[in-house]
Length: 229
Image (cartoon, rainbow, N blue to C red; front, top):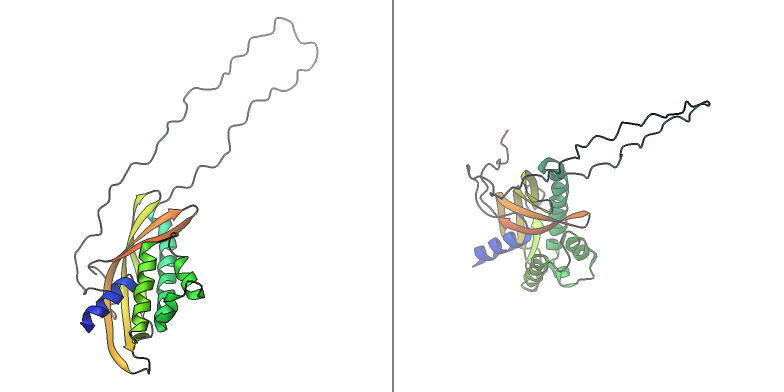
């Protein structure tokens, strides 16, 4: 039962943190759509001017032609350009979750600054985010608090790959090294958890911002083990 609770908190809390190390599974397959290719107009501008039947006795004003449009093309989102944004989101997620889990009773206070930082990583009214907060609050009520394990950080995540699903959605494969100790209200150790874990992070664009939508378990295939060169 204790083991099941630990797996539940890890899956709900982190990306990213359950499963065992392994090799060989491919990332999620997604439907890709070809980029929108709007053909440019091929009609050349008119360059024929009817000759004047009367010689011009005075100097004609220089001919001026309309300048071509200089409007910059719209920015195209690619997997490569989006990866740094997802890396920043995942790092922010790991950091704020670790702070909340140190005293998970704050998860029940929507006005708490840590809770505000956490919710800001998700779209408004995210069921995933509020569900995790509810679970963490129940952990505090049960007298369970979290500390970093011997590696010094609860979560240390890296984004392995990014795949676009559309111009407003992408999925990233993430590997996380987990090192957690669970203690009671007196600081006495109850249990610990550590290892390499795999996850998938779905991000969506809301206005000009990319935000987290879902974080789920995935096989940690191709995730490097600590100490691998």
